[in-house]
Image (cartoon, rainbow, N blue to C red):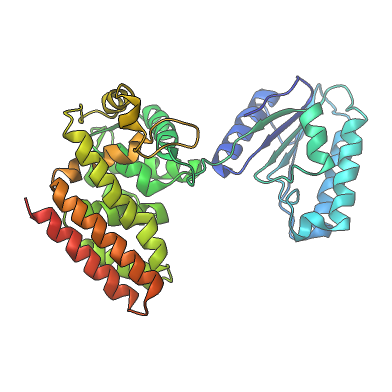
Amino acid sequence: MAVKASTNIYAIVGSDDGRVKEEALRLHRELTGGNDDGFTHETIEGTADNSEGAFQICRSVVEALLTLPFFGEKVVWLKNASFLLDDVTGRSERTLSGVESLKSCLESGLPNGITFLLSATGIDKRRAFWKFLEKGAQVKAFDKIDTSREGWQEEVAAVVEKKAKELGLRFEGDALELFVMLAGEATRQIGNELEKIDLYLGPDRRDVTPDDVRRMVPLSRAGVVFEIGNALQNGHAARAIELIDQQLERGENAIGLMRASIIPTVRNLFMAKVLSDKKLPTRNYRDFASAIDRLPEMERLWLPQKKAGGVNVYPLFLCLRGAEQFTLDGLRGAMESALKADRSLVTTGLDHRLILHRLVAEISAAARKR
């Protein structure tokens, strides 16, 4: 998030739709003092169906900015602008002409008492309009957490805990970790799912259990990947196969499932088993993470690493309980089975569904051999 020098121009942008809309509404209320009677201030909807629509929106905003208020000060809000992206509408000459006229108006300086607020969930940062905003506006950017980066779960967990606290909710046991994996990274989705849980529990119960999460939160793609891994950890072969079949029927790639869910699960189970044998504290995430940080460097280098540095502790913590179902030898065998299955998917013409089913059975069998 970057904040520029104070002016009477504000921009709230970013890929996190929920955060952008939430912050823009909060700032609008702050700028108007919460007194928007529909006459003093102007809100112009920025969703454009085509380039002509984008041009007319920009034209309306310019007219509003140049029209002095009858009473005191006026806030002009270009809300949910959709035409600032690098897409067909955004690249159109008609759209660019409208955006340029808006930029010229802002660059010329707004009349006294006029404030401009822009909110947009997408903006091309190579364009002159963005360059102007960076220099001449108070800019706040809220982007979605990148789930392709190691350690994203911890960032999402912090967001979930903050919003849950606002609702008076407390997560029990593995409920928080489960919620993070099922709900995904979008702030709006997180807020919606927490509100559903809040209504479901009612005023008399504030503790959220894993069963509550499973009952109320639908599976995202990341959630399906997590649930497949969770079923494998606990030896629930039928559940894992059911989820795999559902994804394959929806067109999901078998190799993608193997490398996004099964291989990481087996690998993390093995690492978690080694760590649990070191008698590290395993009940509390923060205690577990601190204990790993205290390990000698040579004992940490083989563990999964974050791009920014340090061990990616979260997936290991999630596997601690499941690792109790296996022996080290059993997990070594499971890793060998996963390697063979992955090779079969890539190099043979065998039925992919059959390969994954057989691998799930072998992993589940290893979980039962104590």
